[in-house]
Image 1 (cartoon, one colour):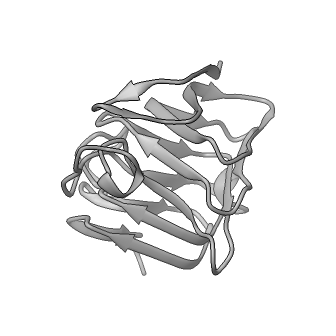
Image 2: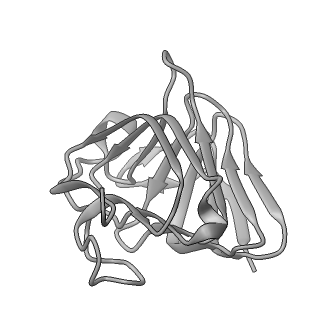
Length: 171
């Protein structure tokens, strides 16, 4: 099951106002990650085919540890707006309170299978992703965003500071 924890941490000598840590598997239910707090992904967060996870607040920042990834066989939604994107980045991203990230600082956003067909990334920025941490490492090995047999929709997605931006076989 999914677990969350709340706090006021200091990471790399930078203190965040608030944060919510997310880890584990979302199964048979929906999760909505709201608010202006920073969300920290600890390890791989899996969204099973019967579940969904939505980041629904424009301007949200979702930070990943080096072993962090989002793996969705269910529905993953992140919808910012043109002036206030949702940002997926390394916990070390200096623009968001870190000490300085490098390309491949965390894993990836990975949508796989028909259960993820209704996934949507809109007005999103993905930064410093693409390391080798991933469940199916032989596909799109260093990509920040991977669609594998998924009809997920990407609209106005910017990928920055990553070795390979996007991978989807057959596209």
